[in-house]
Amino acid sequence: MADLSIVFAGIKAPNPFWLASAPPTDKAYNVVRAFEAGWGGVVWKTLGEDPAAVNVSSRYSAHYGNNREVLGINNIELITDRSLEINLREITQVKKDWPDRALIVSLMVPCVEESWKHILPLVEATGADGIELNFGCPHGMPERGMGAAVGQVPEYVEQVTRWCKTYCSLPVIVKLTPNITDIRVAARAAHRGGADAVSLINTINSITSVDLEHMVALPTVGSKSTHGGYCGSAVKPIALNMVAEIARDPETQGLPICGIGGIGSWRDAAEFMALGSGAVQVCTAAMLHGFRIVEEMKDGLSRWMDSQGYANIAEFSGRAVGNTTDWKYLDINYQVIAKIDQEACIGCGRCHIACEDTSHQAIGSLKQADGTHKYEVIDEECVGCNLCQITCPVADCIEMVPMETGKPFLDWNHDPRNPYHVAV
Image (tube, rainbow, N blue to C red; front, side, top):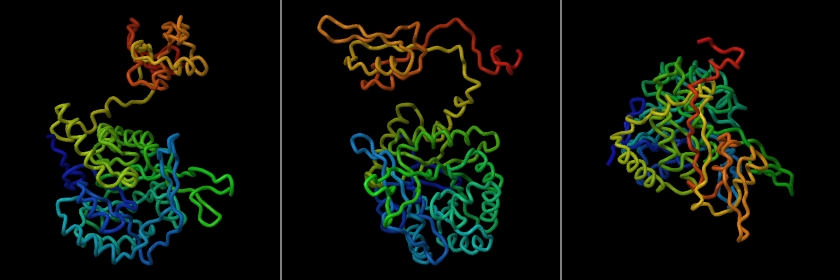
């Protein structure tokens, strides 16, 4: 079997699957259960200064699919509401009992040098493997000048990171907020401050739904609500893009990345790794399915790596980065055409309706003698947009087939139709 062990930012772990800083890592009881289930590491739920934060009730809401599948969770929970002393004591004991697992401590204190100077030695004394700076929390804490209020200001990100590197010898992982125009700006600031790695994404500002009877958003606290942090499978595409942006940015090249956001399977994890992540963090999937979900993740990733001939994660981490580029560098002469497998087609007509109503009228509908319809692609009208393939309920029924155009590679930079094209 493939070797799943990793060394991330100098931190060793038996596998790349770590639990993110969140309710599942709030206390020793949960963390021990996670390690017993096979997780390679955890990021302990964010510690702060005493007195501890005060949370509200209720705290979560969800965005559902048609069959009540949870696509995303919105939360308005704050950092730990347990005392700093209790957390530090439990971290010390857990690390002592589980020395082979990665134990990272998430931190959030005021953007004041003395506050960081005070808490860092206390955390380092626990024997923890590293710290993660929570610069991403989008609710509650920004109102106090912490969380995303820091992560959205590059100068603060760089400054606090540098403080942590000054007063702590542990690896420093900077957790970035997605609630920002360009994620690369914050990553560059963390890199300048001396960060050993970055982790992303933290949760996204959101309101998942509104109770139309009482006219208040969910979750509701009394008769009021507020925006919260959105996570779960729905945020995965956003997270993948931001990870890739950092991985291919020349100014942060080589900076280790811990991928977070909608990871619920081995395939999700492998996609994050292919785009540059050396480890991944999971939260929502564990909250929905329990800690033993990691068994399937480890087994699936190992089997896939074996099938591809990868001996370890480093052999494929970042392999997709070089194939991710800006739109202006894509070949505008490349062409694909949809082809329908008539034996696999169930005649539902969804491809025809989607293309006829909202796309390019490239799928014809032919009524058969028995009253059913046969759907065929009109090649000369098809632009290869993939909509029919997306709407088709049968896997692999519609294939996007590359066509020989006889035209050379041409990107927008060099296209004469572009008034700003580069002369060749």
